Every structure is written in structure tokens, then in C-alpha cells.
Image 1: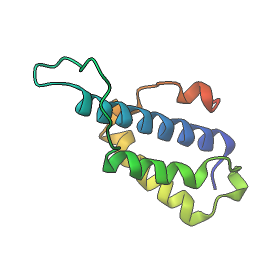
Image 2: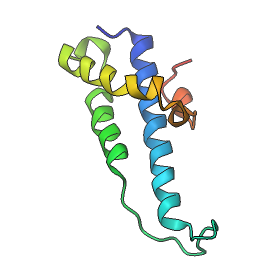
Image 3: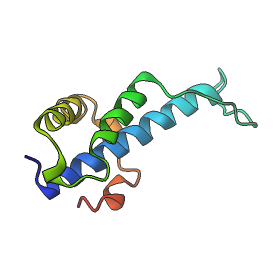
Image 4: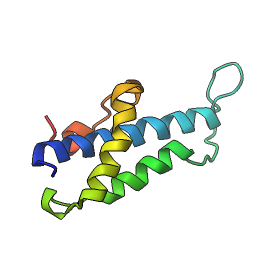
Length: 103
């Protein structure tokens, strides 16, 4: 069972993962070969990792700890484990901690 603090930390981490992945997708679509950004915005699609994080985030967004089932909790923890151990650069705070009061 998630505690309130653990749930807010998970929400903040997922928020930061989505934001950092979306920015990476944006740069990939809007940067030329020399590394400069185009003057006009070019449309882009979100990548697989970003969409996977959004699906997990939607499982717990707006819910209290007692509303989350064990299966949802396992899915969230399994998803976050890879990012918290191996891919820490995607956890760089871009507002998720302040947004979810996860200090």
C-alpha cells in the first residue's frame, strides 16, 4: 500500500519522466544536423517511452493511496524501478516535486 508521501514521490517522478522525455522528443524533431534549433516550430510525436510513462501516470493521477489497487501499485513500482536505478537523468526536476508537494 502506498503511503501519501510515497504516492506523491511517484507522481512527481512520473511527471518529471514525462516532461524530460517530451522535451527530448521535441529536440529530436526541431534540431537540425548542426545542432541548432529550427526557427519555426515543427510538429512532433511523443515517443514510446513518453507514452508508456503517461499511461502509468494516468493510473495514479488524482487518486488517494487507498484508491490504488495492488496491481496498479505493482505496475507503478515496476515502471519506476528502471528509471530510479538506471535512467536517473530523466528524474531531473522540472516542476514535479513542487506540483505534487513531494518534498
